[in-house]
Image (cartoon, rainbow, N blue to C red; front, top):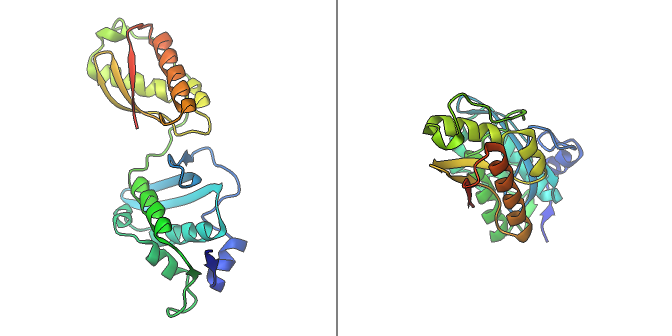
Length: 218
């Protein structure tokens, strides 16, 4: 059993800074079963300006995420590539010789390392917008690649798509090849696959292209 020992860590449970009590609109859901977690990360160039979290977290996970936020704030995002759970735990100590959190295991280290890698590629959500495919350049199939990418990104950021994927990681465009569209989206469970099929049908309808093919990229 993981035990919080330091007074510094305990105080962060009572007065958190990075852990929010409600999910903020700009937060993205972390696409892993390791945590039920939403994240907001804002940068000033390559430095971390804001890093906050919301989710169903255990007490020791909360204080470790508080440490992550404090260690990164105002510093280059690339520091995540070398950040370790041991450094986060050490940040929370009252004295260097005494553990702030006892009994952290290999699984804890693994899941936090995965989170750190995801944070390095974090892209903030853009504000949702209304979208309707209206182009003077003819049907979708005849558009140049740049125009297809522009239209697909706008479609994936539409109210309809964000509402469809409410509470799940938002689909992101990976690549386009003629009428084949590669999209990063959850596709592990029956629910994920049903959701992706709804997205595909919405795309076919929106672009009026019955041969439009959406391919999931996990």
